[in-house]
Length: 77
Image 1 (cartoon, helix red, strand yellow):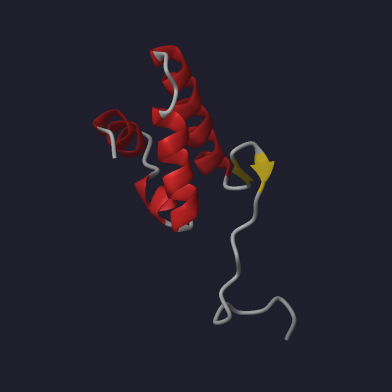
Image 2 (image 1 turned 90 degrees about the horizontal axis):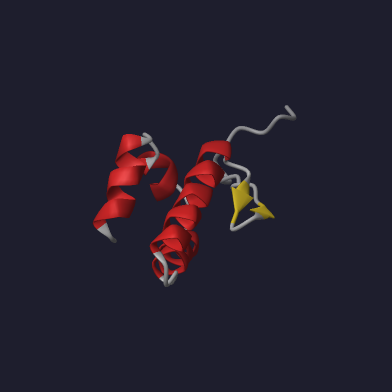
């Protein structure tokens, strides 16, 4: 992982949120961010990832909800 992404996750307190995402999402984010040719593009993509992690309901601009584990308590008794 590039150092600038690590630094951004740490400074925004989003490491745990990032690590809580599925591996495919973590990999997609890193590839997408680092695939930008211009620094401005990489920074814009990084900011989008950080905002999506903060919100918790987006992934690469699409709606996303974390999967509920089978051991989670149900809302219905």
